[in-house]
Picture 1: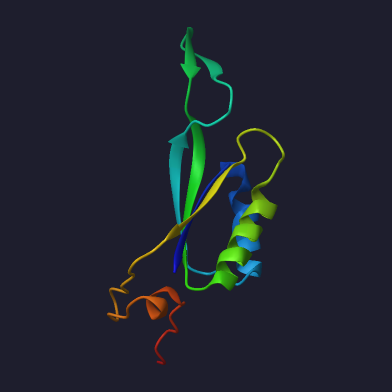
Picture 2: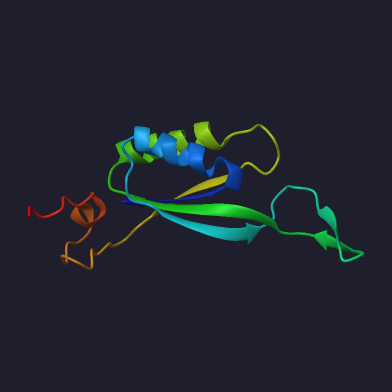
Amino acid sequence: MKLIIAIIRPDKLNDVLEALYHADVRGLTVSRVMGHGGETERVETYRGTTVKMGLQEKVRLEIGVSSAHFVDATVQAILDAARTGEVGDGKVFVLDVEQVHRIRTGERDQSAVTPAVPAAL
């Protein structure tokens, strides 16, 4: 099992979400974050005062996947959809996961990462 963390530009979020949907990647978490990588510092004027903006607004996606097939498909979808070719496009991290527990059902590990099928009504 792997945890994929992607830090991307906010304006690329919809493109990335669409690419993940087409790659059959369903479960994810999205957070707005601030960060600084290779971008140059931005200078803004606020109420007549010049301010250096060292941190840039970014979006962080966290996606738990159960197999190597989904790791490759997920990473490739993010890379293709988030790339502009400019400094500040972001990063993708792939981390090992020791355990996963689905709170609702108590399922563990692989079955907890696989999308759940809703119970019949």
